Amino acid sequence: MIEPYDRVPFPVFFREEADFGDVYGGPGGFVFFDGHLLRPRERPSKTVVVFNHPIGGGAWLPLVRGLAAAGHHVIYCNGRYRGNDTALIMEKCVVDLGRTIQHAREELGYERVLLGGWSGGGSLSLYYQQQAENPTVTHTPAGDPYDLTAAGLVPADGVMLLAAHISRAGTLTEWMDASILDEREPHRKAPELDLYDPDNPNQPPYSDEFLERYRQAQVARNARITAWAVERLADLKREDGAGKEHCFVVQGTMADPRWLDPAVDPNDRPPGRCYLGDPETVNTGPTGLARFTMLRSWLSQWSLEKSNADGLACAAEISVPVLVVNNGADDACTPSHARRLYAAVSHDDKEFREIAGATHYYLGQGDKLAEAVAICGEWIDR
Image (cartoon, rainbow, N blue to C red; front, top):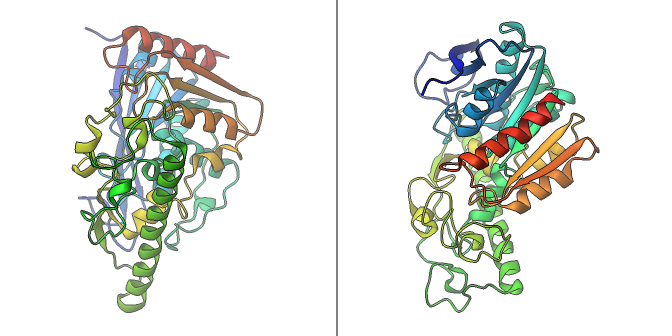
């Protein structure tokens, strides 16, 4: 099938001094990444939708391609951490997105830029827009100088939140295995909190009391890791210098009661499944969130207490129009995330839409994808 648009890859390259390289390959002091411009043939436009995600890799997503096929100009920003978030710093993702928007305006000639915040790109889009409208961040949560107030971030003209979650830190916390009480011995668990222990007396449907206790234990676990990371980083800086790091593994990051009890944050997703497959397998598998990370990255993207990229807090401080689209059978970003994001936007120029039966990726759902494209297209045109 010949698509009715041209796909034009383009490079983004700029100098950025750093104490150490946090991506694999390339000379120190430079940042390289690529973007994809999907440009409809014979459909000129001064408006472009810029999609992004902290780890990139979504240039072939159904929604990205669907919007381009419908005549909308689309850019996908891959960013420096494409495919690997082990050393990811959210503040640097903001700068990469800003450089992509700068390229869109100055090199490609677009006058209006709308942010397409799909999935994990939602909270990044909100963090970018907050800092572009009112820049305040001068250091990463680890205390390293990284000045977004001097980054020349240009605000976008609108934000679309599409199958988006509230933040990487918030999502990880809601997925963490609360039965792990000691990171040094992750296989010794509190049996009454182990969702995957058949002898656990707490089984679906879960009681409100159990869910409250479980959620509190998840938050407490995130806080324990954060406290350890802060202390460990301080020790390294004091003993070995500012640039030292410590990499570590986080076990048990796919144990959300939602996946086993469909009455928790209900939608049309099938029980016993998450977007990566069997949640019990994913809980200890290599693809779980934050499985391998480092101190600075934990504080920037995974720490509920320290991360600046809180989609809810950022949404409350932006002034541009916002569209929130919830997929009715999403098995990654469940409906409370969309509702919380919509409620967090403090102005009235916002719209909430839901696509019944739609999954996270729209794979094999041509009708649902068409509905999503139509909703976004109407909003873009307005």
